Every structure is written in structure tokens, then in C-alpha cells.
Image (cartoon, rainbow, N blue to C red; front, side):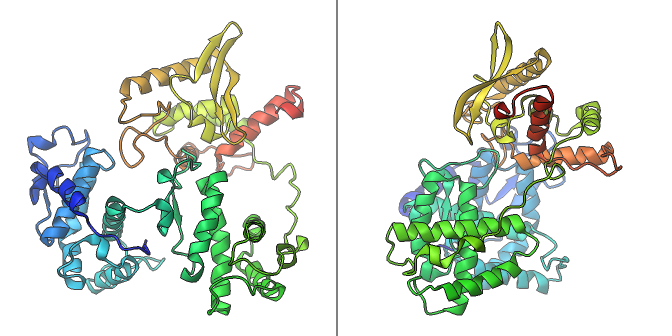
Length: 479
């Protein structure tokens, strides 16, 4: 979370906060029963907390706290009920800040990593329990500190995204972001500071040709290697003296580290080899003097195991029948049309979640078609035939989404969209759909041929459709 450059509140930003708080939001105590909040309370709002009290904080931190929560409530990034729940720990959180950072003039001046450790010690001293993972049993304190710090680092920052130690891919022009996977941040604080700047240069290039998710994988591979090198060669500030001997030692360590993770083991070595090859071709001054082909040999990278029929994940017919019999119980119900389209189209879930309500359904003399972009292969406006029944489900979803959409909550006209909360204006993540399917499997006892609860994976629908098309006589080249 830490950043290498110095962030400080500017007069313009301070005025922006003051102007925003020149209303009910400026009060130190919010009464959630006040008519001011009538349009901000959700239908299931819990009234057991009637007062949100910020008065325990020092005046400057109090101002930042009020601004962050008020701004996020108005933007529907967070619910008023959530703020009310957080407020239960405000007094203790204020005591923590007053103890360790008395007189603090902005939350961004806190050394975040150190503060997290101090917060843990503070809560342990107050007899908070520790779980099996060594974490404090309540996450509210850490979440408030994390949200507050992250919010104002971004709010006060005025420098180019590439100069930061944590990049938000949403702020990088042309960055490839998969809407259905909420991986937006590239964190370089995990890279030893001696190497960090030239790694950021490399990742700036990589981010122009790869998705944010792939860039995170790149950083993980580089992080493991550079942390190992830094431990063994602590005086190095570049990789000029890197030799095959260093690599042999690293490969032995890496094999133990990735034991049981064959796919990740192979991926990490491939990404590391790509890194060496590129920085040498691009003539980085920090690049190894030994050629990349002499650092990582072809035989260092294990062959990917040949997949058998059992390795290819698809959904057996008997499981599909059980799913169809119980699909009406899938919760939340908004995921039902997503599953219907996964089953009917054979598309990746990322492409289903990228559908637009104003262009996704088309009728021709041949029948109904689902229309959308296949992002991975760059096939734009792809059409796939669907039945009248599936078209009816899509049309119903279109009508419902269109009625609820505004330029604020759905600017990109997504068919499946969150209208409020942290992902307001974005589609659900693919993981939430998968988790909902697996909850349904447990609740309705959806089992495989061995009687075990079936575990659904979103991509299995694509494989299942492929098997179905081949069995119906379609050429493998077209599947």
C-alpha cells in the first residue's frame, strides 16, 4: 500500500472536501432517521443503529472520514447500513489513531504497512481474539484503515499512474481490463526497491499488450525471482552479473516452492524467460550480460502434461438435468439468465458478462441470434443462434436492465450490471456466478455419478457445449 512519492493534500482538494461537506454531511453526528437520508436508506436498512458519530476523531481526520463515507454513499459504492455497522468501532479506531498518530493532519501521512502491525498489537492488547490464520477475528478496523488510506491516496494524487508503486489499471489509457474479473491493481511494492523502477518500465510495456490479470501473473513470477536474488545478492541494483549458476540455484529453490503447483511452476518460468529476453532485446542497462537462452534452458521448463479425457472438465448429462430441474432456486435470481446463456451459447463467461442490452439480441429470417464480442480472439459482433425460449429469457433481461439503467449506473449499457455498490456500473464477477452455482449444488444435492456433490466451473459449460456440437456431427475445426 505504500507509495514512493510524497502525497499531500492540496488547497484545491481541501476546498473540494469543504464544498461537499457544506450540507448535512458536514455534521459530526449523523442521525440516519433524518429525512436527509430517505433516498439513501435501502429497503432492508437495519434501524438498530440510529446514530453515526464521528466526533471521537481529531478534526482533520474526522473531516476526511466524513467525506469518504458521504462520497461513497452518494455514489452508491457503499450502503448507508454498512457505514452504520462500521461506526460501531469508530471510538476504538479513533483511540488507535490518537495513541500512535496524535496530531495527524491527513490519513495519507500514515506509514500504512507499519500502521497495520500497530493496529494488530492495539487490538490484541484490547483482548480481541486471533483466528487460526493468525488474523484478528474482526476485519472492520483493517477495512476502515485500508479504505480510508486507499481512497485519499487516489484522491490527493496528482502524478502520472506509471510513477506510482501501485497502478490502477482503470486509470491507464488503453489497458486491457476483463470486466468479469475485478483485478485492477498492479502492486510493485512487493518488488525490492533496488529493482522496482526498471520493472515498472518493463510492465508499462507489458500492459499495452496483455490484460491486467496477465500482468499480475508477470509480476508474481518476477517478484519471486527478484526477492530470491536480493536475498542472495543484497548489494545488486541490477541483473548485469546474473549467471547460469544463479539460475541453477534459483531453479532448485523454485521447484520446492511450487511443489504440487505444476501449472503455476511452468507459467512462472515462461514469464521469467520472456522477461529476460525482452529486457535484453530492448537493451535495458539493468539487463543480464549473459544471453537469456543461456540463463534459462529449454529443458528447464517442464512440458505441459498431455490432457486425458478425464482432465477435460465438462458437465455430464445427468448433472445438467439436475441443474435444469433446480435452476429456479439459484440465488440471486439475476444469475439465472447468465447460466442459461452459458449453457446455450458455449461462450466464455467473460463474453457473456460483456453483452450489451442494446445490441445483444437480433432476429433474422433464420431465427434468433445472440450477438457480442469474443474478446480473447478479437472476434467482434459474433453471432450464435439461440432458441426462441432462450431469446425470451434474453429479451426479459433486456427489458428489466434497460428500465433500471441510467447514464450513471450503467454507462456502458451492460446486460448484466451492478446498479450500486463497489461494482456499480460493472458486471458481476465470474467468481460470484461460480460460487452461486456451487451453493445451489450443496443446497439441492446436485451430485455426480459417484454420489459426490458436483463442483461447477464456469468454463465447463463451454467444454460441455463443445462436446455436444461434436456429438451432433460438427467438424472439430469449427468448435
